[in-house]
Amino acid sequence: MSERENILGRIREALQTRAPFPGSHGETVAPVSAESPASHAREWLPSVGANIEEQFNLFARNTADLKADFQLFASREELKIALLKLRDAEKWTRLASHGGTLTDFACKTLGLPVMLTDHGYDVQEMEKCDAGISECDALIAQTGGVAVTSRSAGGRALSVLPPHHVVIARREQLVADLPAAFELLRQKYTPDYPSMISFITGPSRTGDIERILVLGAHGPKKLTILVF
Image (cartoon, rainbow, N blue to C red; front, side, top):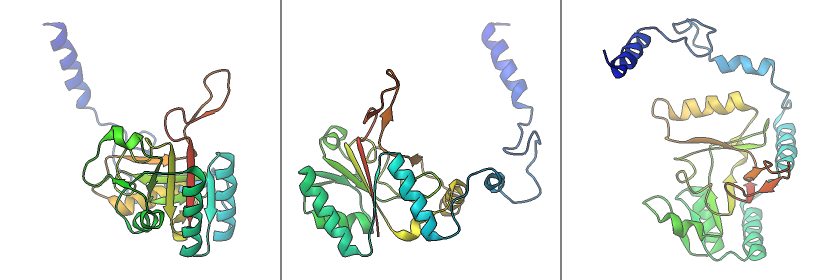
């Protein structure tokens, strides 16, 4: 018997052994309860506040710690003014975005050439865009993060290639914690999940060299979260 046959034989043997069910501590069948293992996470996760105002305050503190720019507006008109200020301050000339209620509003407001990711695009051309504007699935108060998927945020590259990622969201998209975010994604996408799910926590960064923090190492140098 060859070494290849030995390896394949061990694989076939291993496949006959049932793997433990996730979160069941060794059980090989699904628990009788339909309760998600993540539902117990709140027992050891930090508090996120008793109401929506406290959760927005926590989200603001966390995003500041992460070097992200979070702005909360009372109206769509205030959002419009903030977008125009960003455009003029950073001298944007070209954007990347995707189709959506919020992104369409933002792109129309900015009045710049836009590369859309909905029907194919040139990656090299996207890298030349000054900013990528996307929607999201949720904002997470507990971490200051933004949950995005390949469906909600215009594919895989839009939140990564342009040097400035701008997220447009509504107030009601804030969730308290990670278990709530995972539950939202489960309800929204089961049984057909997107090919990519990501939790963005601030701009890209690294501290590998002499523990010096460098932003934009593997993605956007800036993350701006605009909520109304």
